[in-house]
Length: 178
Image 1 (tube, rainbow, N blue to C red):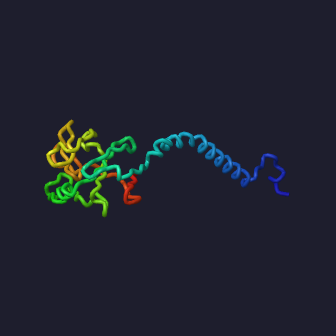
Image 2: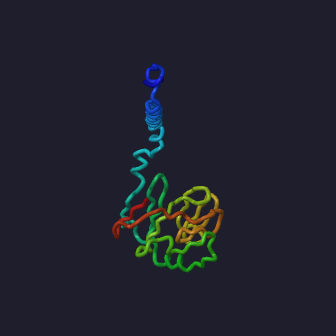
Image 3: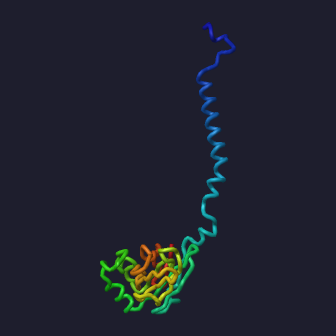
């Protein structure tokens, strides 16, 4: 018989390792369960998720008009541009633009007549008005930014063009924003 087999203070090293691993795993599990409510509270609320996308019926906009819809708490301009407005936007030299972007980059193929932009001035977030600017587009009366018929900044303190949100056409008459 070995000397340490009869010793009551002797512990099997494999059993001790198992107890340490099991206790560590239980502590990690308890920590994750305690942290979950905090992590879950950072997820967007149900009302925010409901507004993550919105569909709009384009038949509500007549040629030469725009409709303002609300998406994620922001105004979105949906403008049905006239052929003259489209031609005016396409004829601008890229060198004349503060934030160079062609009109074709700002609209979807096959739907050039519809322009969808977030209706917040890129300077300080004011809502520009249509038709009172120097370039036939939007004008922000707060600080004097002028945008053309493609929503591109042409004059004033705004650093970039009106933002084009992510959108797609789900049919010929419906657009899904977001």
